[in-house]
Length: 301
Ligand SMILES: Nc1ncnc2c1ncn2[C@@H]1O[C@H](COP(=O)(O)OP(=O)(O)OP(=O)(O)O)[C@@H](O)[C@H]1O
Image (cartoon, rainbow, N blue to C red; front, side, top):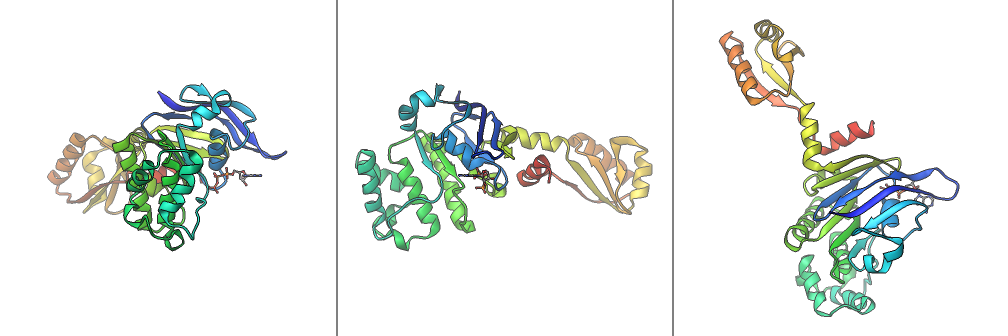
């Protein structure tokens, strides 16, 4: 079951080029879906289209199986969102800020304590927001987005500008919401090393086009298939002679060989052969790529 399905979604501002171009997204229910792309790739425009904040030009958007255009009000009741920085009143406390939005959204007052707990701000509920750190403001913005008890959260670059501990707090909070409260999350970012630790699914967009979508584990597994193993030995020439063309080994320099990512049994066999031929093996290391390197390979620069 997908929460969001778009088909052939396109958008252009004025007479400019398409900034969203034939975009077909599938966001699975229960997932934390990382929507990644370089600056200007079209992430914010896509999220605004999904939320109906800018008018759709071409293509279809289905949310919870229903077309957005005909069901906008009922669909948006199930979605919480934070696009851009949250609009907060600095002279009011966190609770007072939440009271403003609670009245506006006409939701239950008890939700205020619940959302403060959810974002980890219960202890600073009575502090003036003007004295909050950027990370705390961001969390309060997410608390406001959660007031009406949505089952799906859309966040645009929620860790932008945060220091490493602020990023960790947001990451842990989102993970808790997903795991313990069953909230699905669509989160855009260009901080891939941070997001790699959080997301279950990824969509990678470049110049308005989707260039990869799927489970993070599948993407990492695909990448491992093309990864290599580096052998640091006492004598690469002798090692090559011993292997006599097997295991697709290639000499890198005086000491190092490189092979494809072999099964463990073959690594063990090759290691024993080398030791048997009096070639010492000092280290065997993989060059598995992280999400950031895979992303750079995919977008091509
Ligand atoms: N209101 C607008 N009018 C004209 N062009 C716009 C408007 N909003 C965005 N753009 C352009 O559309 C393109 C995509 O912008 P968008 O903000 O969707 O990208 P993004 O992937 O979110 O980038 P970033 O990570 O920098 O926020 C950019 O070239 C941007 O300059």
